[in-house]
Length: 243
Ligand SMILES: [Zn+2]
Image (tube, rainbow, N blue to C red):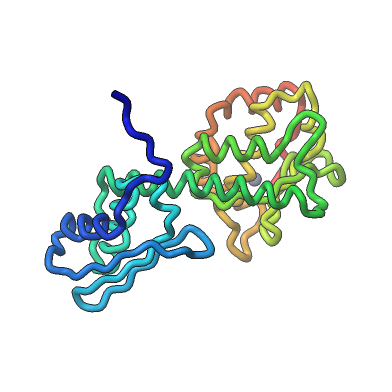
């Protein structure tokens, strides 16, 4: 006897919101929840007294009932100004949101592929988009990041390994790193460093020298091959001169 296969998970959005209300102790509230097509993956909830009405993108159903209950818990708790509980439902919901962000990134990258841009992410040896996609999936520190556009920088100072352009939300990587002899963990480290800059935008009036805060450096050291990358750069006399 095999499990039945559902093309579309049989989840009931009304039931999910009723369960969430019960879990929050709001057993007496009137719930009206329905699926509704939004332009993007989205859910809204309005509360008037003890009546809540929710509209949810059908896309959330793909995550199954746990995700939907987690979403309902999140929205309902906020509407009642309660703390959002940390449980299996809300964790499933957060995990689903993270994976959806990766999908959206995937689609955005596909779209930008067809568009005329000066940025060239595909190098002779390394494809920056591939690397960034993998890194944002792999490293928890980067999972909430809105991923910048990536490009090889052929021109400019050869000493600058990478640069994050905040106004354009773009990362440029020195094309000297697009060589067979440059190990992937070195290139990844430079990208990791620049992604952290994208994660921690520089406040106005701060000099370039002060942007590597203690917090920044602490996070940078969480790159798994930090020591190896440092050692390789030193061995190859590459100055750490970047922003
Ligand atoms: Zn830097």
